[in-house]
Image (tube, rainbow, N blue to C red; front, side, top):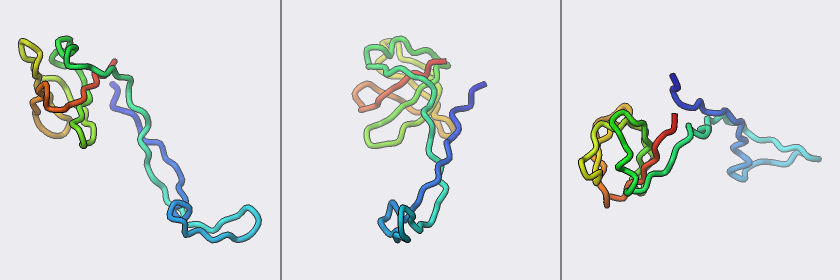
Length: 111
């Protein structure tokens, strides 16, 4: 069972980012370090335009994103007869109605 991509770990020199690093001579810099998690690319997906919502089925895994918000993973619960809307269970949250015209971007995860 695929549980999602694990974050990659990178060592970041925070003082270099902030511009507070002090040169100590030839090709060396004193800088504080900070370990940060950077998300790896997720599983492959396909962008679905509204006209392709007809191909969604209950149980499909999707990534939904409303304009100005972070993307969220979820599972399609139900699709309207005309496919102008569908319900999705957002992982760790609740059920959300996705309606054509509300500004959602939908990606169907490919297994």
